Image 1 (tube, rainbow, N blue to C red):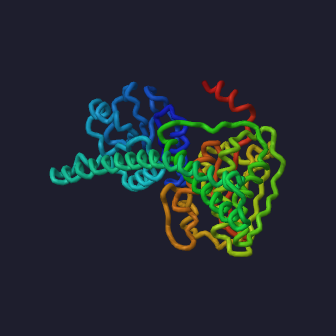
Image 2 (cartoon, helix red, strand yellow):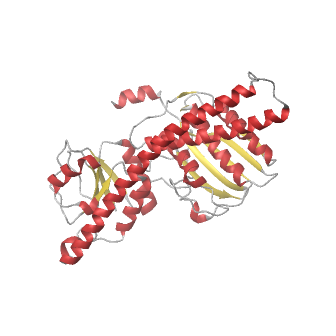
Image 3 (tube, rainbow, N blue to C red):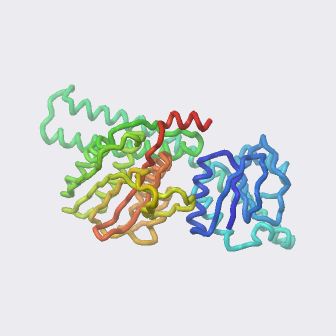
Length: 399
């Protein structure tokens, strides 16, 4: 199927490509059009509603999906008529967009069906439409509440970690070895909670405020070493060995060291949780080539495809493999979803937070992340793009 996305938001374009790849496989194309421009003919249209731009006359028999900010609902309805059944409220989440598109892909007459319904069915449909909009509003209100609560929660965790550091420095008196060990474990647990709270805050605020990572050249080995150090107490308790084999940092690898360190900590923490006692975790990092010529090459498992004319790496890949049990096949594509937890002893989603934060960080860097089962155990992989010029220069040229 051919889709047209009418938007000027690059992040929304990436989200739509990812969602369509999951819903439609490879049987789709997506082209973009600036608001106010002329949209080409297509099977479906996704409109990022901008109240400052007038939409053209819309054919009601075609498939249309409108992404509208709650504050613009009245403006949209006043200018476009009754299209409530085709509305998703912004900022739209990956899960909501995926579920909505999946529900209509198999029904060609979904958007035109309302005109033929009888009066009683029309009334039921309108009730469902209003309930859908209210649920979206409640979801956004819940997210706003969580952001405010987490902001206060982080402050208390920071203070608690500081007090632990003060005690460990013996500024208030000498500690016995047992006391020092207890406080160190307390500080380690506090830091883990603080990192999780920071990740949840960034995950929630990202839908409302665009805060790109601070990309700069740095030593990727320092991130690996610090992440290994952070999870060392957890690994030590289970007698888990952590080894790393990471190639030298390429000069054209730009990344946010704090975010990549958080990403590696989350992956290692997840691996430690599901690795049996006496097991092992192996970290590898190396230059990698991904064929980006096909815009639809977005899948949970990214395969290396080399061009005949060039074998130069265009990304840096990390693999974090552990000796735990295999991940159920039906979880491989859902494992990175927000607030999705399948439960059970094989659930690696971390309550839908830890791995969702990992995907958020990777996508902020323009990379990809996926999970797979290997002969040696489950493996989480992600790529970071190698850039041809400095990010600051790229941003300037884009403007």
